[in-house]
Amino acid sequence: MTALIASMGAAVPSPKKTPSPTPTPSASPTQGDGTLQILTYRGYAEYGGTSPRVNWVGDFEKTTGCRIARLDTVQTADDMKRAVDQRSYDVISAGPVLAASMIEAKQVQPIEPAKVTGYDDLTKRFRDMTKVSGKVYGVPYLWGFHEFLYDSTRVKDGGLKQVFQSDRVSLKEGPLTIADAALTDGSVDDPFELTKSQLDRAMSLLGEHKGRTYWKNPLDLVKGFATGSLDYAQATPYYRLLLQKAGKPIKAVSARKTTGWLDSWMLGANIPNTDCAYRWLSWMAAASAQRDAAAWVGLAPANPKACKGRAKQMCDAYGADKPKWLDRVAFAARPPGGCRGSEGECTDYDTWTEQWGTLVN
Image (cartoon, rainbow, N blue to C red; front, side, top):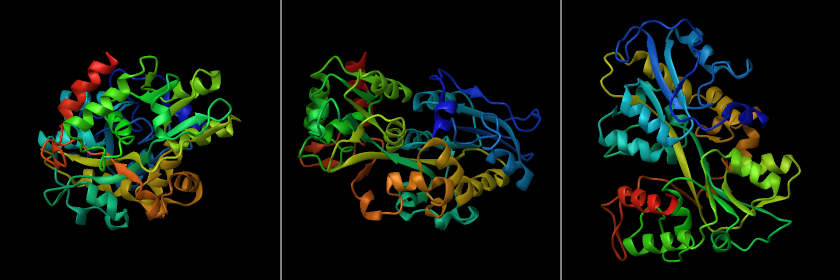
């Protein structure tokens, strides 16, 4: 589990170009010469630079003959959005908010599933989550969900409301955390489709305690529990296991529902030759690549065939082989403005972003 700590480092203010496993050709993002321009999160596409045992990028090049001309890695969704707006990429791994934004801006194009080897092996629920107006826009890769961890020597499991009533809690920095606060509201069915009054109640709950912190680097919450400065923290099952392995008395708060997300590989727009891009999508859909990635970054694979060997612990932690367990996960979507709730029209992501800014700034 120490692999992730070694790979994450400090927060990255802008995309970092990692060393390429082959000499970098003078390639443009749109040329069809067998090279690829890739944007992804740290740890999602390893080339052996962090550990020689973790190198599925190099294997891709050897097997397919395609070369990685550029591999930019970022740590946060904001960093990724800035990178996408600055230049074009052939393939991008994106979460739900950025995916929706890129589809709307026509920065990505629909994918032809028949060209992606092993596409049908991916969990159907995740495949359905990447469809917009009947078109497929992503190849599901890694997914996770949030838990609220607590130090069992300091506090007891009082449920989700108790977490949000504490000053000694660290929440993930970002507007989608509003959805987690909304889950304390019994009137909320889908925490990503909030009416104005539901959003106002969630923001009121978040604003009651000014002493809490908001993390961008999850290692901050690990340090918080290690030093005793935190009672609670929003995290993933991976960090619960990490802290427990270190001997910390950390448990997960009981909750009827939680929030999760799916990261998928997307195909950039205006690519004249997509052959190598589709080879990459097929490579990333395969159980072998997803097994390596899940074990390395501490998330669950979208391909259940990957739940063996080194990835089994992560699959067990996330309940990847328990479909009913996933029923309790509300997977993130970019909060829409067109849905109709019981109290009127739902609020959109711009409203969430504005409200979040008033909270943390």
